[in-house]
Image (cartoon, rainbow, N blue to C red; front, side, top):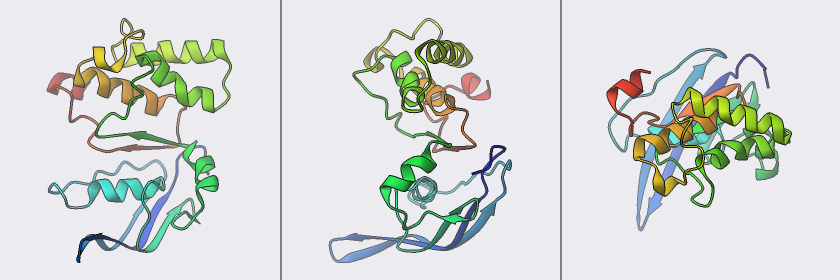
Length: 184
């Protein structure tokens, strides 16, 4: 993968979900390219397939047919063991925070850095920088249950940025934030 960014390409992407006897087409023959360094927003009604499309980029969901290419490599049918290596370069801000309840705000942000093999002193410094960046310098020792929805979202944003990813995915990243924090 590139160090300046990641090129994302969908080719004839279709995703069908089976519910009882019915089939629901969340994505229907989507073809789209986002060049490295480009910022792309996908908007649409609730249930239109936006989250499904985003989850395809890091292999959290698999297409029924079609290709998902990251810098020319098709990850659509890639085994989980290979996807883990690719995900190291992808930051993901989830719609529902996905924080570890057993870890503090600082611990949640530190987690991907630990997985990356960063040394303890460097991790602590990076976590402090990120907590300050998202306006939570005084909340690092708080557990998710002690944080508001907006604060949890900011921890999720800091965690996604922790490893300086070449690709940042955001699934309604500002939905839990007030307008002034969103603007910030």
